[in-house]
Every structure is written in structure tokens, then in C-alpha cells.
Length: 179
Length: 172
Image (tube, rainbow over all chains, first blue to last red; front, side, top):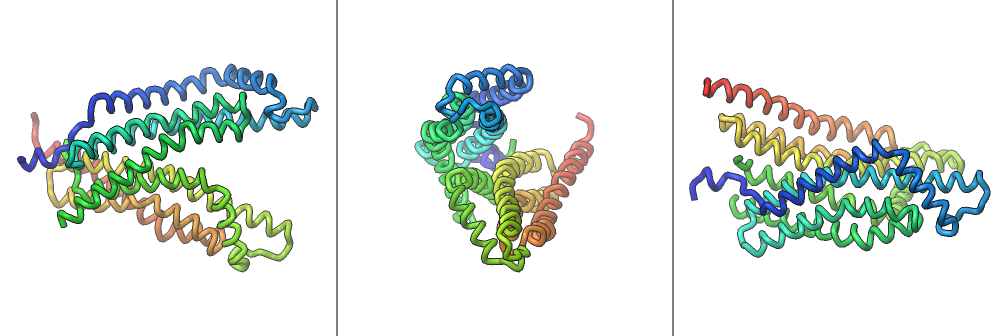
């Protein structure tokens, strides 16, 4: 292998790049939608909360209920923002880390497993915030969070963290062997 | 595109891995972290200026715990970002800068800059051990400022060297 070839980055599979680019695009659209339809989103969430008084612990006293509704709306908005931020970040993380795996992981199996974990984990994780925002008006803040955690954050975030430490160990091992 | 040396890639990947893990820890171990922070504040009453009045001490403790949590949160976000910055700017340096020694200096500066988020871990711990203001000042003076300056210097030098490399090449 020539030196220039050895020192060049290798691209990850096109499906991975496409996933990352689509994720970043979704994040951008999410950010724009939050700004454009802020009022409509807030109205929808408010009406969904009011339709489920028992879930949110509403008691029918305006002064008490307004505080509860406000807290849920703040969390609803925060979840949408976190989707926007995490989707943008994870899109870039997918590109950078799968490029590293494609270049530095030696075995085909290792490379494929790392790429799959980083792509699926990285793309799936931010959708947990979107799910949480949808669940808050229907199931409340804590129940919605628990559902998003078990359905999305733990499996997808776990996959990403496992793959990241695997990749770190792999690069570290190559560094030690070379020195 | 050429890849930077393995050590640069290693630091970048390590910092991203730490950032992601910190996010998960913050989310799943929040009550434990909160308990630990409160215990550390209580263990250092003089550093925090606790006076023995429940109301006053409660407010001081809450502020210190908030600062420690903010430090962890900053660590999470900065580590994810800086890891990518090191990887991508290292790649730009490897590809666009012609001079080997200049590239080596850039790698050192950018890699040191990539460790900048560690300053927020120090920020969190120091705020609990030495008090909010003294801890934050210590982290800023001895970790965040030097490492952040290395990152800024590296990026400015990279920009200058890209221009110099293009000029040195002459017209296409």
C-alpha cells in the first residue's frame, strides 16, 4: 500500500452517509418548524393536555392547573429543541466516527458491526426526544420520559456508546502497537 | 482527504466517547450525582461559607450543586463538539498544509484544544470542593483558558497556513 493511500480517509458506506445527511436535514427542518409553528405546536400540546386532566393531575382550579400546564409546555418545547440539537450533532458524529471505523478497523466484520452500531444508534437516539415531545401531552412528563428512555434512548444510545468505546479501544490499540 | 496522525484521531474519538457517556450518566444517575454533590458541599462547609442556618445553607448548596451540574452538561456538549472539531480540523491540516513541522505544531495545538472539555469536569469537581467561585476560577485559569487558547491559536494558525500553502503553490 502506498503511503498516500495509507494516510487517506476511507468513506463509510453510502447508506451511512445518506442516513447522516437525512438526520441533519431532519434537524434543520425540526428547528425551522419549531420557529415557524411555535404557536400551533403549543396550542396542540395544550389542547392534548387539557383533554387528559387525570394524566397531568389537573384539578379544575385555574391557578393550580396553569402552573402544571406551563411546566408541561416548557418540557414539550425543550424536548423539541433537544431533538434539533442532538440530530444535528449526531449526524456529524455518525460521519466522523464511521469514517474512522472505515479507515482504521481492520477486519470486515468489525468494520461492519461498528458502522451498523454507530449509524443505527446515532440516527435513532435523537428521535427519542421527538417521541418524548409527542408523549408529554398524552402521558405526562415523567411517564413520557420513561417510555422514551426504554424505547429509544437506552437501546440506541447504548448502541452508540458501546460502539464509541469499541472504536476508541481499537484506535488506542493501533496507537500502542505502532509506538 | 488525508487523515491526521493516529494520536489526533484517538484523542478526538476518546473525547466524543467521553462526551456521550457523560450525557448518559447525567440522565440515568441524576439522583446519585445530586446526592454526591450535596454530600461534598456539606463536607466542605468553610469553602462554601455555610453558616449553620438551614435556609441560607440550603440556598448556597443549591447554587453549588447547580454549578456542578452545569459543568457536567457543558462537558457533555463541548466534548461532542470539540471531538469533531479536532477530527475535521486535523484532517484539513493534514490535507491542506504543506510543511511537515507546521503540521506537527498544528496537531499539538488542536489536540490540546480537544482536551478543553476536561476543564468542565474540573469546573464541576472544583466547585464542590473549593466553593463555587474559587472552583470556577481555578478551572478557568488553569484548564479552560490554556486549553481553549491552544484551540484558538491552532485554528488561527491553520487558517494562516492554508493561505500560505496556497500562495506557496503559485497560480494553478
